Length: 288
Image 1 (tube, rainbow, N blue to C red):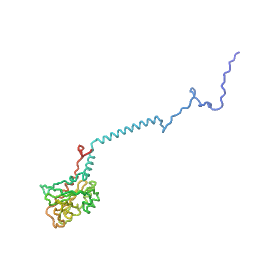
Image 2: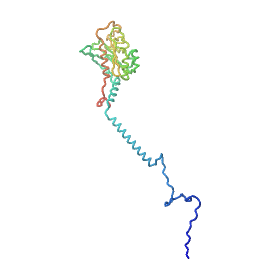
Image 3: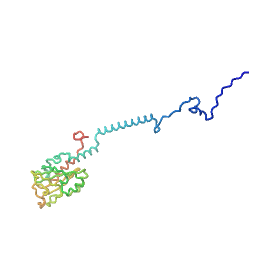
Image 4: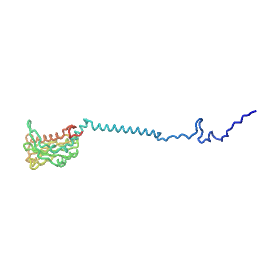
C-alpha cells in the first residue's frame, strides 16, 4: 500500500492584522512591494512647473502692455495737435506776450490814429518806462482794484500826437487770465473827459522823458483818462498837454475832443497784445 507524503505546512502567523508584519504594510495582489509614492510640494495649490507657466504668461502680458504703451506714446508725440490743444497754445502765447515780446513791439515807435474822419495821423513814442511794478504805475486808488485781481505788472510808454501838442502815457496792466482782467476792468472808474474840473485821479501815472516833447508831462498835468481791455490785459491811458499846464488850470470844457488820440492809442496796443494767432507747426517759433 502506498501513501502520499504529507504536504509542507506554513508556519503559523503571529496574531495581528493581516500583513502587519510586512515592512510596507499590505501589498495588493500581483504588485511588488515598494516605498509609498511621494507627492511633489505645492504653493497656493500650484506645482513648480505650473508657477513657471504662470510667470511666463505674466511676463508676456507685461511685454505686450509695454509695446502698446510705447506705440501709444509714439503716436501721441507724432500726431497733429487737436483744435482744443491749438486754442490752449494760442491763449498761452497771448498771456506771455508782455514778457516774451521786446518792448518796442508792445509799444511800437509809431501808432496811427484818426483825429477826424477821413484823415490819419501818427503818434510818436517818446520813451518806455523800464519799471514794471504795479504800484509804481498807477495811483493808489487804482492799485486797490488791480491788486485784488492779481496784477502782475504795469508796462508804460509815452507818445505825443503828430503836432506834439498832446501827450499820452499808455499803460498795460497784466493779469493772470482774461477773466481776472475783465473783473478788474469792470471795477475801474468811468473814463473821464476834459471837462475843466481836473478830477482825473485815480489814473495811470504820467511818464515824462527829459529832452523830448513829453518832458513836462507830470501827474499834475493829467487832464484825461481812458480804459480798455484785451485778453488778460487792461490798457489804461492818461493824457494832457505838452506844455505841462496843470489840469486844475483848465477852467472850462474844451470844444471838440482834444484828447481823442488817447483811446485810439490804447485800443491799438490792446488789440496788438490780445489778437490770437493759432500755432503754425511749420514755423520755427512754434513747437508742435
